[in-house]
Length: 383
Figure (spheres, rainbow, N blue to C red):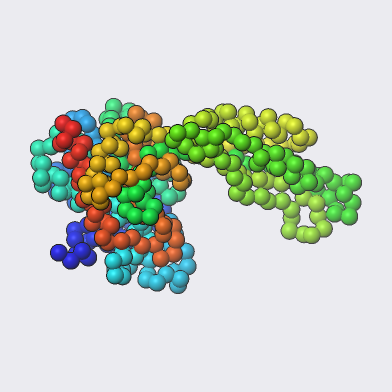
């Protein structure tokens, strides 16, 4: 069979040709739900606010294996810089080129075809299979997966194993599994001063000058050394703003935005207190606000989901993946607190959010095989 004409690639192209820039879905989930309905899945749309979500389940018994993903994509950036139109899903040699090709519509297509193949081979399989699909992952992520999980928890519908199809591979398909993610804590710090003419500094109070020693001290703190699962906690300043735009005006305040990516060595409360304690050493008048994007989570290496995935990769690719908790946040942070084993496993991540995003067709067909074997390992061999 021509690798460009497999069911996986055809489905991926159908999804990729839809310009579903976050929080839009624009019919992607209709394609998914129509496909799953033919496999005896019960489809349950769960819209919240302007966000489209789909919960689909086949079976009523444990264990429940869930494929989680998102149909929204980030904006394309300058279209004229793309080699192919970003929503054309053009095939260029072995590459499928489109916004969302790697992150992560193609993985959803792999989910679908792997599930179809599994049900064909095991129509009376034990356990349940679920799909949790949202259009609110690349945006604020307040009306997407988090709301679906709250609904499932309220009616005691428990996920045992969850595979998020985010692009986890580094150099080659299957070389890395994300078995956890660091927490993300955002802060906005406003240092207050007194605005004035730059020629009369004695009549003003420059918040930039006051803030610099404090920021130096804050960024020099070693928050922890990490642990067996996580790298050390990192504080990074992302934005600094002060002034009116004029060269002869001392600013009245300075705003700094920074972010913690933190390990399980810390809680949000200990990090907040550490910042407050540091600032207390300086004579500052300030306001400080916080926004928690997600708590850290980790799935132990000895868990059934990781073992099933590692075995599937080895069977299909001939090598075993390494485990990693690096990178940004994902919707796995909303699912892990329910007690589910959660991993992220998908295609290469080297072009995500870039101009000319693309993914290997060969990899997608192999990824479909791996997802199929994960289902077999969890629901058949472990039964």
